[in-house]
Image (cartoon, rainbow, N blue to C red; front, side, top):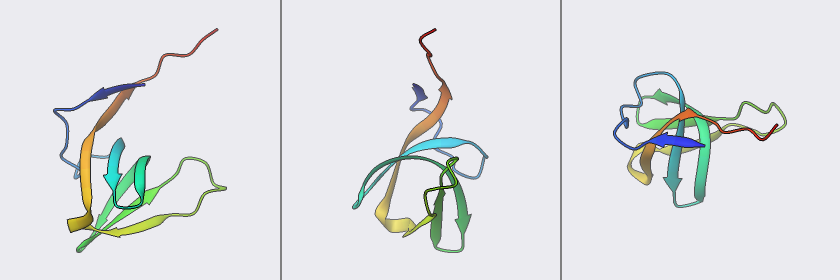
Length: 68
């Protein structure tokens, strides 16, 4: 996974690496008032809702390296 650490503006759609009190997540992000919704691409995982003050955006995922 390639992460651009300079891209921390979560108002732009995308998948981000997020550090929280609950751990490190790689999720789609939606901002809703003072909360951040961490949504998984895998529908088997539930959305995680965290107060914006308890989130540190590490960067935006900009690519993946896949073994063939």
